[in-house]
Image (cartoon, rainbow, N blue to C red):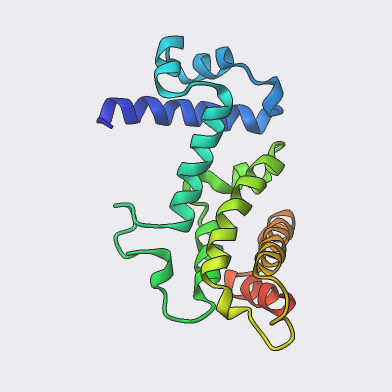
Length: 183
């Protein structure tokens, strides 16, 4: 994608994020998005087939950045899983959320947060599945992996929701301890 296309795409994403913070997804029209982004209808449709496709692409871009930090903006990260400590993958994730990479907190706390939390959880399940040995104990060894992944992912999402709803006053290290103490 060339620089001009990237700039247009970013303008559409920014307009969409702003509208999502103001109203429900179902109330937003493509016309409102293109007006706010200052692009033509044909330009919008050359990037996104529908508003739902725009939502999917937005989530993929944001969550890919959070879950797999390989972009040039963070050259110190080879991959999110490159951290050394056994629980650092989740701590790393809390830290990215704290610095609000790509305004993800606005999306996770906006009127449409259920949509974003669902997309977030899909990506989170992949992360948890990769880290499942951290959570396997004698007590839960007979629990199906898919159930355990779902349970841990749900606990993480609810921990995140609680942290955001309470103003993110605790540092990521404390939230990480809270999360690990209940899973």
